[in-house]
Image 1 (cartoon, rainbow, N blue to C red):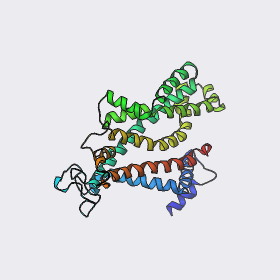
Image 2 (cartoon, rainbow, N blue to C red):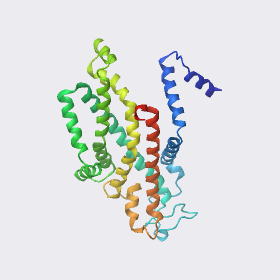
Image 3 (cartoon, rainbow, N blue to C red):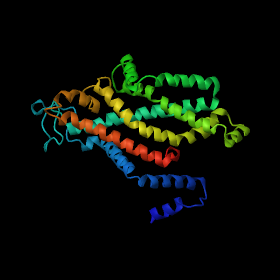
Image 4 (cartoon, one colour):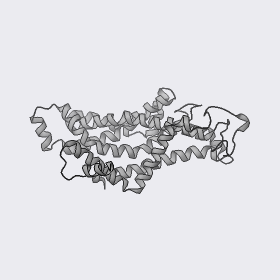
Length: 300
């Protein structure tokens, strides 16, 4: 009954308040997302991995750092559902705790780069002139380098570890968001409603962050969702190369690196974390495509 009442209230063609109109738009977006099978598959996979990461201490059957050298490289069995690695550590438990490390790195990167890229792009697009030139040339410099190579250089300049990897990926991931936000800003800065805000005495900074940035947010969300897979792969690549999470941290890329020499004999040891990376990356791609259809109809 409550769900039906909310549906009727949210889908009303004549909303009586801004709050009702906002929730109506959100509910329509959710219905559109539900109508996309691949998007729902991606959302379900992501939700499962997030829940696995949150409840890893409850779901894990073993301590991910406990070594059983007498039981090393065991095939999947009742005691070790996904087998054990070269040090006898339970692979299933390490996958669960590895989700915390890998997804935590991705979330940290997004929290850092999305607001930064949005702010730089909106400021450059709104002010134009020398401000636009300086900020966009800086963006071009970062875009000129391959993301992984530049991230490796930053980590090497600091020290290997999760914090350094997050900072390095963040420093290399913001330029696309800045260029996207600038393009969106250029299309609206000359609009009548922006001119009306200027006439009311609103400052440039208030117009940028209160009125222009929210208009860029839907496209930013779509771009971030689509970029999640590349951020995950970059984080795993840094771990694989020994520049990310350090042993014995159960990070998926580092797990593949330590087990790669067993690829042909005990194939499940490196394959299982690789499958985890594949599933999460694919899920974000599915969800990103669906979010583009829902939030950015111009992209269709």
